[in-house]
Amino acid sequence: MGTLENKVLKWPLLLTGLVFGLGLLITAWGFNVLYEYSQENLRTEIKRRYEAKAEQLQERIDLGLESLTSIAALYKASNHVSRRAFEIFVHSDAAFHEGTIALGWVPRVTEESREVFIGKVRREFSPRFNIFEVSGHGMPGSSKMHNDYFPILHLISLHDERLSEGMNLAAVPSKWRAMQAAVNLKTTAVTRRIHLYGGEGEFGFQAFLPVPETGMKSYEDMITIGGFAMGQYDISALLKSVFADENDLDMTLLDASARENEQFLVHFGSDSDQRAKLTKVAEIESLTIPHWVRRFNVGDRQWVAVFRSLKDADLRKESWLPYLGVISGILITSLISLYLFLAQIRGRQLFISRQREKEERALKTEAVRENMSKSRFLRAASHDLRQPLNTLSLYTHLLENKLSDDPETKDLIEKIKISTKSMNNMFNALLDLGRLEAGELQPQITNFKVEELLEKLGEEFAMLAKDKNLQFQVKSLSGIITSDPDLLERILRNLLSNAVRYTESGKILLSCKRMGEELRIQISDTGPGFDPEREKNIFEEFYRGDNSHKTNDQGLGLGLSIVAQTAKLLGHNFGAISEKGKGATFFVDVPFEEINEPVNNSV
Image (cartoon, rainbow, N blue to C red; front, side, top):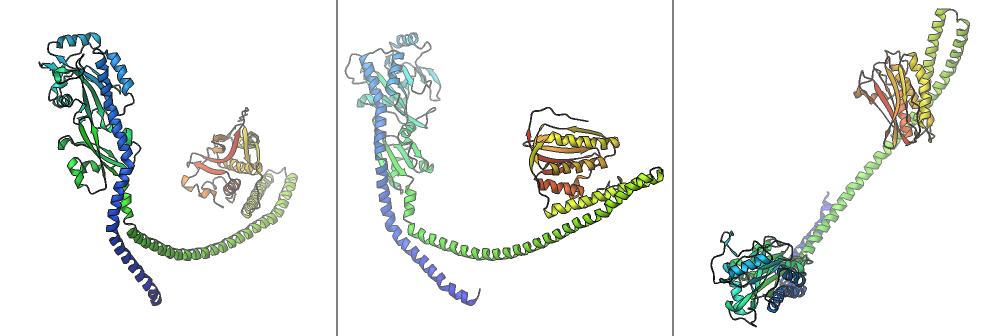
């Protein structure tokens, strides 16, 4: 790059640097102003977006707990409710209450009436029913003697799960505290979180509503109640019933009435780290991310939900838009510069490429012209040389008729005829090669029966094979092939001639087989074969195999070359498979349509 170019680029580069630096300063100044504004807007947006959903969640919680009121009304109306009637009632009342796992009835049973109660339950619906307690290790055992027992009598799962009945809840401290709170507060009481082993989430809760003794309108203490309506709920299922369609929601639910180490209830959203960040109500004040707090009344307890939308990350990015704009401008400028640089390189490459193409076209034109000259020469030479050759054949025939009695003369004339025929075949090969290279040989594609072509060739070459004591067999299919019949016959005739010429003993097979939508016509022989490494060489012009001198081959080595070029002209796949000393198979694939007609396979 010259000095002038450096001066031209100096000022634009300097101006770009100044604009970039000024943009950073403006962005840094505006960030502090816009950040606080965006945070407040985000808190307002979170509240606006989820306030209605939060109200809906409170309604779902109240609706789930309302089922206990319905059970209490059922037992107030009738002290004795059969299990079947209770099950029907539960399913009709709470079938569509999302989050409700099970509903049950926990009667108060005195020590004096315990055995009578157990016997009655066993007779009515549960022959193995018993009142039991669970040890601190979770193992069930016989219930200890108490003044009052509160066994689970009916516990109906809304999800067809098998739940334990007969457990004395008075022996479980967390359940007993909730039951006592319900009696003291004369309302529904909720336990702290409990672990679930079959629900959608990790934690759930249980709720208890006292029911007065039969015949009493109200209760004062544990002695004056007839039992408790009981419910078990899945916290995650409750949340999903409301927020399942909120993909951007990040919410943590805490129990403000529980001890600090048991306040976390559930995290709802895709931000898995949020659970580790917020596990206590006291941590809400230290949150720096935008959020909205909503409190829920759940029986006698209070839950706290912290709402945070994942979209706040996108809103925070908007505060950095000036800075991002500068960076984006630099990136775009860099891309444009790179594009211009590459465009110049590409232009130079195109120029060089066009020059090369021009040279290649000139060379190709010259090669075609030379090839045409060679082809015209071959055609002219073969045509001119065939005139005296035809005359020689005529004289030889006349001489044979006059001197047919002399054996030595007859043998000499026969050798002259063979040499004349070989020379004629050479000239024909040269003429065909010239026509192929000049593009003068145009195929006439048509549809014809393959069996007629193979039968014709079979009759002709069966006699030639018989003269050499070779077995000759044709195996054909009935169908229509698409090709130039004359050129295809010339290909097969050339291959069959080579097979008869080079096979000293054994057999020759002309066959065909289906290859998808094509028919493979192949000539197999038991001749000397060829080395697979030389497969490409045998299709080259003027190539003669290692066995040509053993068979007195007088050819020029153009046969397979003409076959290959003719097959290419017809658009047919052509190739060979061989193993030296074990014969060879040459094949050509042509389009085929099968006809269900019997075929005469001749030998």
